[in-house]
Length: 223
Image (cartoon, rainbow, N blue to C red; front, top):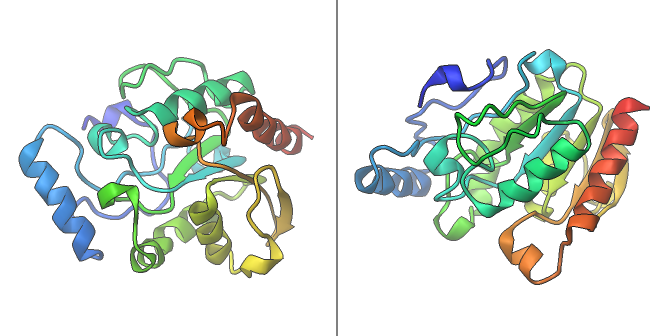
């Protein structure tokens, strides 16, 4: 991947050959052999042009999709979930509405970072508890690396719970529920169902429900 296509990074990222989760290493190496032109490595956080200091909103996802971020190297790029996420961010002024599911599409975030709780693609999109726990060190350093962070939007229960643990918050103090808001550890957290194709196709999550979450986030950021 051409580093010039991505905003600069001010947070610690796992190395491309991160060895910490053997199952994930084996899976990404298998796909690297099948598709050598793909990213096939831990996917870094996606930051605005101003870097970590410009971040007021952090969106925490679960993990890279096999043919999405694992292929392109940018969170939520290349699979369906990104269509809804980036359209919603643009609607509320958190992106420039240039998303075209390619890393050279000219998309820029505004005051926003997108980070996955697990940086490597897991088989069947299901990281194990041990893999979630292991990768949390990078989630924690990312969150702590945003000095002006006001709001965190968590996409799905796994991302929500891992974020709470990264903040040192007990799960019972901020239980996951779509649209719920919690003020914990000096952060305002809004939780959402994940914007996956399954959730939207089954009606678990509608665009209106998703937009309501980011309306809450925008109110805090600009309030």
